[in-house]
Length: 370
Ligand code: AOF
Ligand code: ZN
View 1 (tube, rainbow, N blue to C red):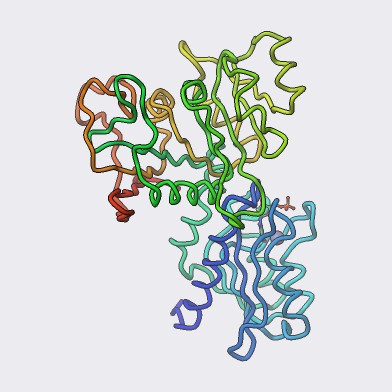
View 2 (view 1 turned 60 degrees about the horizontal axis):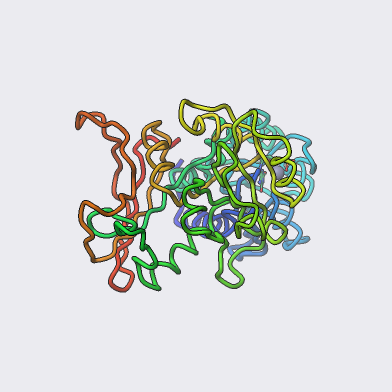
């Protein structure tokens, strides 16, 4: 189709809405919807926290009677299945919109083109593909969950220029400055969950919340990959599990009394197959997708980063570099993972570079994110 400039502008604002919901709508995708009548925006909405209501009925409700004859812009194909809410296609049909512009199809097998067919069968004009690439990027976590059964993984690292995260004696606070640490909190705000390995819990006792006021309506899920339940019951992540969810990925066969102690406090334990050392990261991500997560931020440590890179499971990297050097006896951001040839290195494309005080945030993506 020939894309009208208005279509692009309205879809761009629908995408901006969708981006705002990232981190809060899992297990559902964050969808943006803009209703336009006579050239004026009469309704707009994003998928609600927790995934319901969907964006379309919320935007139609704002538009009220002005939805009749309107054009509706949606970043994802409207659903046509009866889930926990009635189909969005039926809402669009019943209020009498004239045209629906869709950025990309919903990969959910219950929809996947059937939403478009249903709208067309009802006599609504449908155009698809407006800003598809951007929409696929916004929905990348949801697409991975549906199509590959795992969440999207962003690896966040903060290191010296030579990729070190702690001195020989273990000092690590702080390597990057205030602006970089605020940006790291904003990253947490856009992810469903933040994950660390047990080594990081033992070394830093982090809280892993998003401490930017008003940034997200639901607390971020905190996940500890801890095959042998080495986390102390007194760890901050455990002690604060009433304020924000704490999940632990553990190996099958961990001590029952110890497991009970964690679940009594309110920690959710998820059993995962073991690898020779630690957890099978593939199985761990499968379990997290099955629990509904679409997008996780991995904040270390070096062992978990290495396991994910070795298994080719890192989709995006956010790497903060401070203008300092520690040298080879300091702790590396990524542990050894056995690369012998250049051809075997995981490769990423650089997509962004932001100066944050004296630090730099470099962002990378793998080349084949669905
Ligand atoms: C839409 N608009 O805003 C979203 C959609 O469990 P349910 O009933 O909420 O349905 C979840 C599915 O709905 C999800 O897998 C995806 O296919 C779609 N998400 N669809 O029309 C929205 N969030
Ligand atoms: Zn829907």
